[in-house]
Image 1 (cartoon, rainbow, N blue to C red):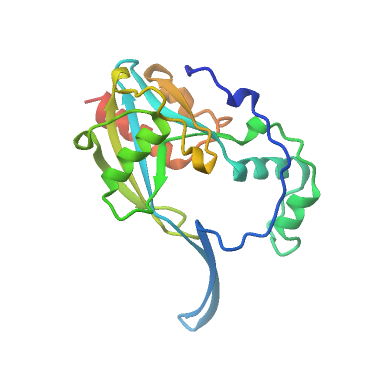
Image 2 (image 1 turned 135 degrees about the horizontal axis):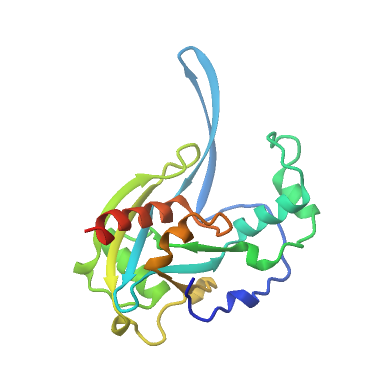
Length: 231
């Protein structure tokens, strides 16, 4: 698979600690109790922001533009799997206690994911404008607002959050890259890299289970094959 030179290949992570999650600006957990057809039930859920996802196709390179970044949740999960026999009963031992008690021996690259350009909906503006900002911030492309097309929307995490995910599509060219732009939000410490996926390697990428990726990316790539490549 083709990509730019990657600093993530020499990723260094130090001083990891698991601490209580309090006053998070991104997620809020709650528990609801209710009676369904006469049966008492309990359900835990979280509230999180809606999100926008943008699939980019670089016509100059004939490649889909994805992003790579280190995801702490991915790393913690992979590291835990290497040390702890998985239990279906989360009440046996709290995840925080487990993750705090095991050494961090998994290589940092285990926490690197391949994703669509994306962002949370946390502004009082249109989804298209948020998508445009995210493309510039993460990927460095200055895409005209009118070139960002809505594809579809769906709810994610039906058992936990049910937030709305909206997918957009845009075609870009190398001249649309702005020098010095991209790489993520420096104020939030983001370190995002571009990954150019050649059209000819699309299907092998999709079915490679060793590559960490979400269903949203697989859906977007499947949509592109059916509606752009075959058109």
